[in-house]
Amino acid sequence: MLTERIQLIVAVMILAFLIVLFELAKKKFMDPKYTLAWFLVTVGVMILDLIPDAMKYLSKLIGIYNPMNMVFFIGFIYMAFIIFALSIAMSRMSGRVKKLIQEVAILNRELEDRTGSKRK
Image (tube, rainbow, N blue to C red; front, side):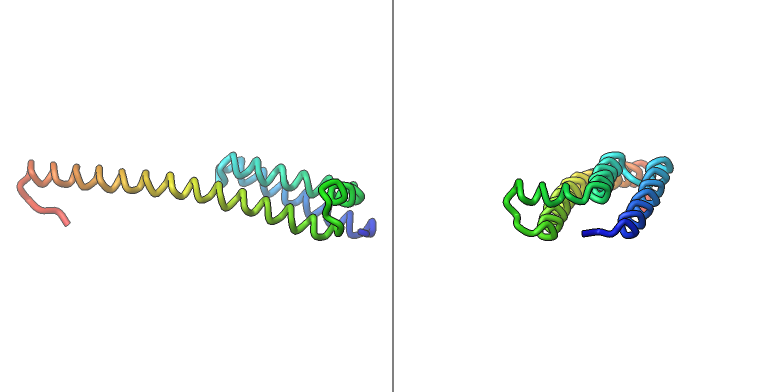
């Protein structure tokens, strides 16, 4: 069980992280969908910090006997979703880069044909 002192420290750290998260979103350093995902996780951690018995209830509801195992389970599921989303984004970007390379090659070829000189 968390002591009140540890709960307060965790709550302050979560609030500091939320401030950093909003600054990153405001300066557009982070994609809004990832900002939303981190915001939801942070709010979830805050709820679990403020209501420590919630984790015990959730773990019993799902059938996990140790609440700490529930934390690892939730972390694993979250990381799997993040990896999946990043894989989709990377695949999409890879296709866009391939298309851009092809377009640049076509434009270079047209430029060579018009000027009669080879470009590096």
